[in-house]
Image (cartoon, rainbow, N blue to C red; front, top):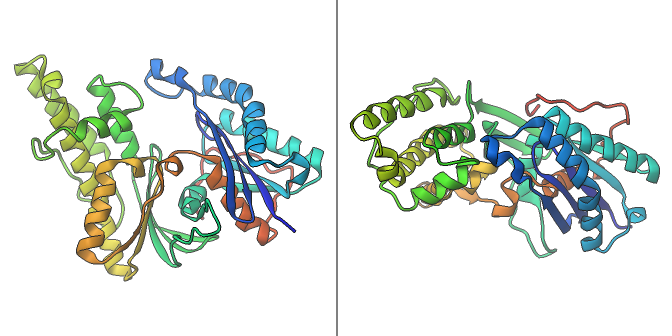
Length: 340
């Protein structure tokens, strides 16, 4: 009998639904919210309202593209957290109502676990390019920067994480300081490809162990800009490509220094990257360079699986379904949690 999982993701500002059949992705639909660009960041109230408008048509379209009816679903997997509480509640409430009406199980998914398991999304039966356990995964996004040892789909250990700001947050904040707009990640990435990464030097933290820190980098970037702007009020406009490239290089160097240490200490050379910042061209190139230099076997997700998406929720739900790891209808959403 076929196992068909509907995945629902609504942790931030993207409403997404996906359908997976026997581990193979049939459809993935994402509705993004452009309204937040004018505010320079996600406005929680606006995000939750947009989710309410989008979730029914997004789920309908995902089922339609997959060629399945809701009566054929085996279970519904949904993001329970972490994320914005108002946004999560829309997805959680919808999943509960639909699962109850169909009389099928619900599967709660940790959003961070979903990002890691995005590497196991198959687009065809022939797709066999998945990491082998155990592997090391660098999870980098707007809200998280973690190095994780993945022993199994349900056995993950955080070896290191940021003690303050996340890498993606640092990029967004520096982009905002430069007046480049939101979200900053794609803008910095595009400009960096045209700039000199060695043009400027910014502060790097000295944090023991495998942990990260990016707050000092933001401060260093801001203070440097203030000094340069005193001499040239149009400094940013004249040098934005070099600034973006130098900022990107600094962040990538910080990330890779700790990751390199973890790989060396654990002896695990299966190394993946996940999360929104994994779409960054500089970070992807660094992975390829390390693979060539150190013999790592690397796993870089397709661009469509880097940002928040329901396909990663559905594949996590699929593995949990096989283990009959369901949740009860009284389980609430949670805004803050890490990988257990």
